[in-house]
Length: 137
Image (cartoon, rainbow, N blue to C red; front, side, top):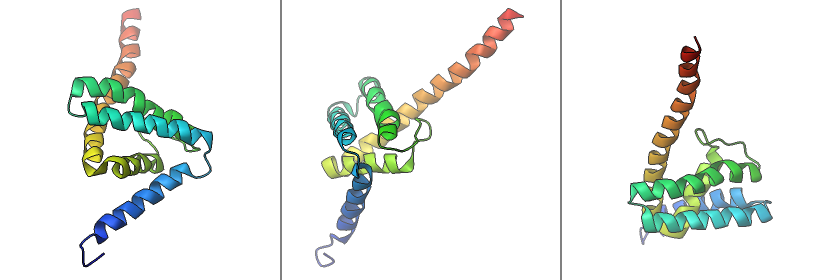
């Protein structure tokens, strides 16, 4: 591998395989649903990954499942704003194994967009009760 210069790629592949195996281990039927959601997300990334308005709507549905519902089904505590590391590493590893580093880069871009949106939603949800209290007075 050193002679062919593929040692780094092999190490990355081995790390990705372990991350996906950690998600998959002893999960049974839950993993099937989880992997279908991962495949749908990967397809959307390939088709719409550069179109922000389209992908954020589609990714919101996928990522909510992958980070929250999927994480709970897989036995990890996770929330959208601070997902479990095992879950985020597993998603990125699965995407890298399926679509390579380009797909992972698109995923990271989309996650950045989603974090902006989720942060704005959380801020609005926190501010609204404060505004209503002012009107009540």
